[in-house]
Length: 294
Ligand code: DGL
Image 1 (cartoon, rainbow, N blue to C red):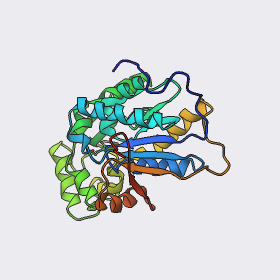
Image 2 (cartoon, rainbow, N blue to C red):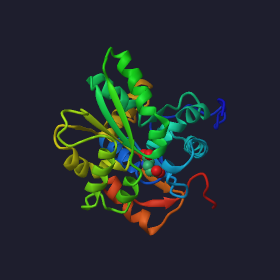
Image 3 (cartoon, protein in one colour):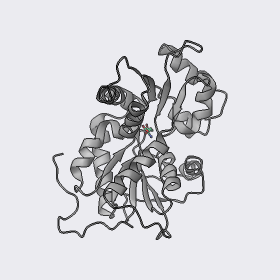
Image 4 (cartoon, rainbow, N blue to C red):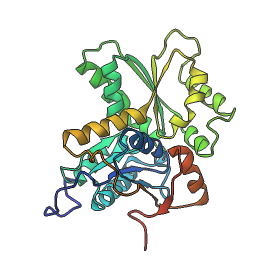
């Protein structure tokens, strides 16, 4: 996976009105895409959801890396000026491999690092993280948060990471507000040692899966008002904006050229219907991407 490029070295430099490439294992990353669309209305997005290979959260790191690199190559070959890994499981296991496969002028923004930087910058010491088995098993939040806390001179930090694999399928089923969500969230948190009313056990909970923002009210109900829920998508959108601004690659502020495109590797009626819930407005999914046979 050493630094080879998927685009010819003689290619013209990327225009600032090129699209931002965004990918996830499926449709959960649409929560991040929506935050980007809200924060940067002039930008055009090319979204790819790898619905044929999801869930990444239960796959091996090697397989998630293989899929992620293939997708990043595809998005770069489509002319994307930046790649957003809108999946915690892929961010946790594949960021370095994705960076290594892309030309240096294509920035890669993942969903973990901006949240970690935000927490360290805000001086949050006691942090809980919930996510898929792949994300939690990688220990990425713990490692990088401890490092960022040290760099910010914070001592006495505590990070607890809890795998909550039943939540993404329940949310995908549209059950994020179902009464069953509460005992499932509570069961996971209590099994991990969290107890309602325990004095500021954690100050903040990172919803470390791009599906979970839809279940924020259920998390809020279980955790109460004392614990901050970290709004990953808007933090990531700000990081994407900063990365493009630094490189002088923000789209011109006048009207956006063209529509967003939303592709999935396997299109079913269920994905087509659920996509709208994740994006918060109408989305037209089409089959496409690196595995698509014309
Ligand atoms: N969207 C993925 C994430 O953020 C979770 C879904 C999956 O397991 O594929 O980790």
